[in-house]
Length: 201
Image (cartoon, rainbow, N blue to C red):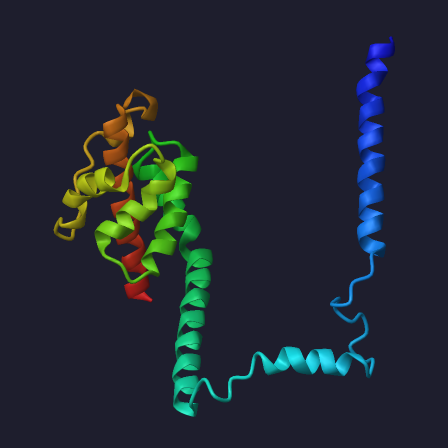
């Protein structure tokens, strides 16, 4: 019976010690602490020193600021469009994937669709986009290996690809290599669907 209370006793001791150290750290005076009241006249010197370190007057010309802000707004516009696009087409895409690749787990399809939407907004090659879509799902495969498997899809002509008897084969019955190939095929199909919808918009 005594041994059952010993871990609890050690826990209480550790908790008390941690609380004591926390209180000591909070009450310990520190000359460099941030002023709690920025309106306090004594805080003005501290805040002025901070602001002096962030002055942009000598760093950028007006043209550089204009160019940088335009780049920022363009990027924000792309992000906003991708969010709107995801809301409008996400459910239709997921339905299409579930119908076309019925033997693949839905969580796998959703993960590829999510990665594809991110990859499409990046200025990278199709091979890079394909690998980006499947890499989180295949952590045991190196990127070099995935690039080898992605080549047929990255350099294939546009149009409908042959996915074989994907719908009739259970995911668990596929070999690891077949799962990689199928994952890249799904990524290619997803990217082409997203690309087509974005062109229509």
